[in-house]
Length: 443
Image (cartoon, rainbow, N blue to C red; front, side, top):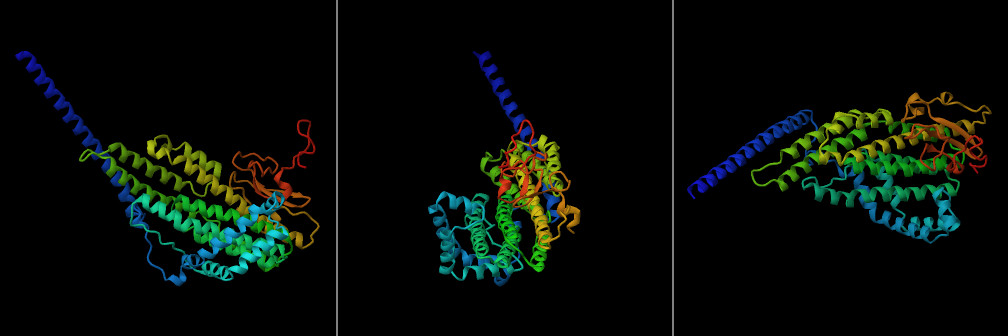
C-alpha cells in the first residue's frame, strides 16, 4: 500500500512537473510571439502607419467642405428616387428592362424617371455640392470595437454611395434620351468625381464599393460617348478626369486601413479567447503572418494583374500564412482582379473618347492606338502590359483587354473572357469563321 501511494505521489509530481514545463514553454512561446509582433507593430507606428481603428480618425474638416455633409442631406431624396424608379423598372415589360440595362429608356421609364426627379428637385444640386467639395470624410465611429464599427459603417456609409450613383445614372440616361449629350457627360463627370471621394472610405469593402460605383459610371459614360457628338472641351474634361483615376493610392489606402482593422481584430480575439494569464502565441504568430501578407500586397500595387496575382500566391507570406490569415487571401485576390478589371475599362473609355473624337472629325483613315495622342499607360492592358485591342464593329468601337486568362478571345465581353467596352453587338464576340466555329456565331 505504501509503495502504491509512493507511485501515485511520484506520478502526481511528474504530472505537475510536466504541466509546469508546458506552461513555461507556452509562456516562452508567447513571449517570443509577442516580441515579434511588437517589433512589426512598432515599425509600422514609426513609419506613421495606423495600427488601430482610432489611428484612422482624421482631423475635423469644416462641414461646408465635406462632401459627406451634402450627401447626408440628399439621402432621403436619393432613396425615394431610387425606390420609385426601381418600382417602375420592375413593373416594366422584360424587353424594356433589357433595353434599360443597355442604356435605353422606354417612354414609360423615361416618364417615371422624370416624375421622380420633379418630385425631389433639390437632389441634384446637393449632389453637385458634394462633388465640388475638396474633401470627403463620412466620419464613422472609430472608437468602438471592430464588430460594432463594421456593422454601423456598412449601414450608414456604403448604402448611400451606391444609391447616389444609381440616381445619377438615371439622370444621365434621361439626358441622353433627350439628346442632351453635353449635359449627360457633365453628369458622368460628376459621378467620376464622387468615385474619387469614395476612395477615401476605409478598408477593402469601401474600396470595392468605389470600384462598383466606377463600373456604373463607366457604362453611363460609354453610352454618352456613343450617343452623339460632343464638344472638344467636354472630351478634354473627360480625359483629364480619367487621368486622375490612374493612381494606386486608393488601393494602398484600402490595404493600409484594412490592416489596422485586422490588427485590432486580432487583439480583441486574443482578449476574448485567452484563459486568464494563459495567452495564445499561435494567434500572435498568425497576426505576424497577416502583417507580412499585407506588406506583400501593398508592394505589388501597380504591377500587371497576372504578375501581381502570381507574385502574391507564390510569396512566403502566402505559403507560410496562418489559419486566420489564409481566410483573407481570396479577398485580396478578388481585390486585385477588381482593380485590374476597372482599370482596364477606364483605359478603354479613355480610348473610346479619343476614337469617337476622331470619328467626329470625319477622318476616313481608321486610327491606331498610337495615333490617338494618349500617353502609353492609357492604352496599355493592365493584365499583360501589352497594348489594348481595337475592333470597329458595324455599330461602334469595341475596345478590350485580354482579361484574367491573358488570352485574346476576340472581345468576348459577355463571358468575361475579355474585359472592355463595346456597343450592344459586342455582347457576343466576333470571331473569324473556321471549320470548328460557325460563321454566324457573332449574330
